[in-house]
Length: 249
Image (cartoon, rainbow, N blue to C red; front, side, top):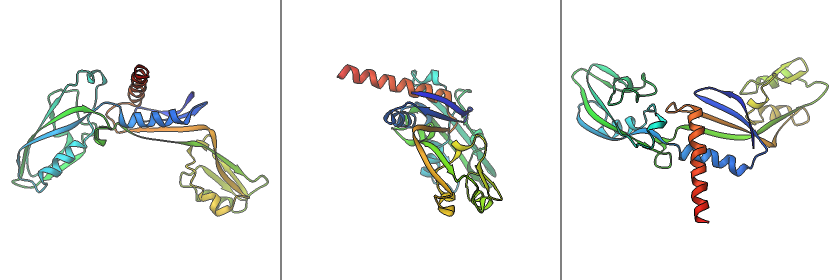
């Protein structure tokens, strides 16, 4: 399989894959979602809660707060304790959590947890543990998707109503003026295959299809791990599973 990077940063990556087996691409997606270790709050001990938010709702909300995860700690299965003690009136944010490890902090410190009114207070302790998406979706590190590479065929010689057709594209990759309709330079891969342009103009003017020999693989993480760390853990997980299969065969 060959892979080239279309765009990538700490938050997201888009890859172009070719010479692949679709089963492997799907396996990579499933492994990223289900088999990458991240930290999330698992147990919450509430000593006092006089807010309007029920204990169960508050505990569930805390479990969905993305926590910065250090891959080197995965094998140690280290548990991190968080303390939260506040009195209203105050908007309580994720940054108000006090961790036992200063390097393990909420990814989004401004995330609102609850609002405390005058006289209301909260006092709790939460334990974060390592887990995988197969255990609970709160441990899943990213949203992952893939689709075949778009192919956009535009009628040669001009298309009537080019500007109108271009305006229908929800991802704004088409440009049109007069009878001239074209795909913006370097934006073919951004087509989401919705066919809004084709439905309006007809296949005789513009036809949207896909190339079964190429796949666009997209990953957007929730912030616990960088995209590089996620891919590294996913590949390592696949290798471990293949070794286990090899032993059993």
